[in-house]
Image 1 (cartoon, rainbow, N blue to C red):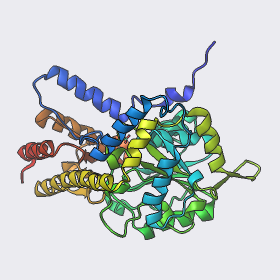
Image 2: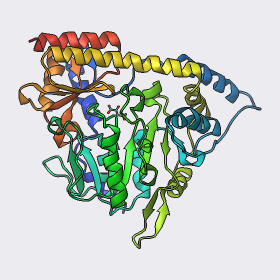
Image 3: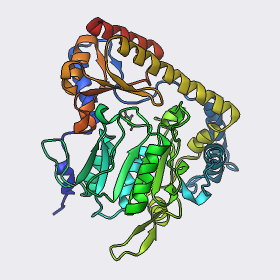
Image 4: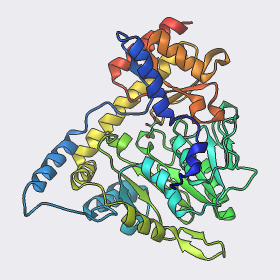
Length: 411
Ligand code: MLT
């Protein structure tokens, strides 16, 4: 008799973005003429930068010739890409990361989800609340989350509320966790931590032998100078943190798939007997066993992001989306909304009017003005009463969506 992983049976409903797609699909089917503007899932809409396209074409041509064809590559990523990441992305920020501390992968979603493979099942996990649902759901699948309660919380997860009341700065937990997920610039709130605020967490992790899983997928959107681009800008972080980076939002790779994860060799965790183990070694073992590397063509595409042309084009992409973010921010402010984020991140987090629930607000926007966003409560209990809009749409759609909202909320 085949037994299932019963942890999956504890998961509520469907994955947040699948649920939104289902509801929008049902509405669309019933209202085939509705011109729906999607500002829900954070998916990019601009084409890949020209430098990336050219590199991909060239790589495809290489794959067509016997003498330049490539089969399996190194699971951790080709040297040409890893070297560029270190030289162009990490060194300029003063970060001393070695080649064998970088693991190229197909995405930060997969890596933040899979990292639990190398962590003990008894670890207590802490998340900021609201939070990217992948962190919680993958721990629930592994059996680390306990049971799901009606409150929207799992019994064995430590929730650290981030709301307007604390300025979206997470307070240190009263119950000591072993593993802490931090995502900055934050998905979903679009808020950031200053260096001094992030240092509090690094110091806490050092003092309490915790591991920080730092998701920096939106790092390219940082505009302000006192916001850290990497957790390793904080002294001591290499001893306690794994960092996840992605080309998805930086260079339009959501469909192309390429990311990288940094696991410093000095980062150690423990066996139950208290023996120290390098997490880099364990992840290398996992990665080489379960993953055969990102395709050659895609890695050449990612490499091109670091060329002079690529860097210029990527900046233009980021500017395009940040212009949308400003349009959304300015319009919502004029309509009288209380808003957060959107300054160093492509997400705008708004307080729903009159304490409306976030799903009611979702339904209102969908049915009255055909605009789709993401209900805050989908990211965790502290997201109730909030709503997320993404700046990743086309500019004309973003303007049109704001005009439509004005018909409902003009002051
Ligand atoms: C989001 O909308 O939160 C993101 O698109 C999720 C992701 O990057 O997987």
